[in-house]
Image (cartoon, rainbow, N blue to C red; front, side, top):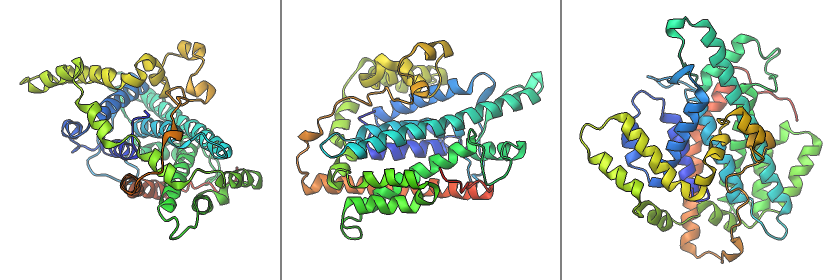
Amino acid sequence: MDKLSITDIALLYRYASDMNQIDFKKKEFMSDQSQLIRSVITAIDLAVKISRGGISRGPLQVKERKVGDIDALCFVAVSRIFAEWRTIHLALEGKGYRSYTTSINFSSRDMIQNLSKIEDGVHLYLKKLGLERSAEDATIPTPTIRQLLQFEAESGIHKKMPQLEEKSAASGLLWTKRQISYQVAVLRNMLNVPSEFPRGEDAGRAAYNEVYAEYHNWALRQVFARTFGSAPPVEQLFLALKLPDDHELADDATTPTLMSHLSEEDSSRDGSKEGENDENELLIALDNFGKDVAEKWEDFLGLFNCIDDKKKKTHPDNILQLSESYVSIHDEYDYDALKPPSPKPLETAKQAVGDFVEDMAPLLSDFESLINKFNMNDPSRV
């Protein structure tokens, strides 16, 4: 996960947004990606499939996109990766960074808890609708975000909207949207230092006022206020977000392995079955993505709440039990070795951040419209 760049995160969100569209050509999409991205997407698909369970036949195939027509479980999976990735790349160790790093770790754990609410909401949706189906037609597609919110609105879970039931998918989505919006706003403002904001501290404070201030009580506002002055220099954050360099990823993608050889044979074989392709793709995922997490493959499934309950109870680092990551989140990275960046890598990093901000805007706008449509923009303070 530490090898994913901010460009990769934007691409994963694009996959989550498009994968249930009826005209989405997954094979073509995957063929354009690096081996790393193909491996991550294969792992996502596997985890989501397990989370769906036997009652669901897969995602709802959408012919004409409407507001919120994104597969709920795929969005959860990608957002959990984003939460972990953000901690790995932004929770930098260093003198004076303690408050800032603590806030990053806290917000990532909080985001994962909110994503769990969405996943639990999907399971409730599948269970209730499954009971209403006949034995001959028991399987149903997993819901889109829009269907999930509509289901909760119509079932009376929320007694007095826009106030939301805390342990609901709508509450989870609302706060997840706010968390992503805040991160995007911070990055956008960082790009405008020093032209619009004198320092990174000012950029962070402006983003907080834009997204969070009206929803936090006095005590929580003071906690956030203490973190702005302890943030690392924006140049260091830009470089951390862009790591690793493109040439490093290229080397990874072109390194010959047994599984890459199987992939080449599979793609050249006429009339190969889709199931065989999926199996080989999974092997490739394990071989390549496993350079970092193969020993923790079961842990990776646990990241998406997909491992057996008995294993969850005995696993010391299950993310939903302890709200703590176990996928290289505490791996040491020698950020002190980062020397002042030359203009070229810094500008490349800024371009990647700018592209991410632009790519995420439609998704966040979509969620904003959906939340307002169902009158679910809960103004309650926490």
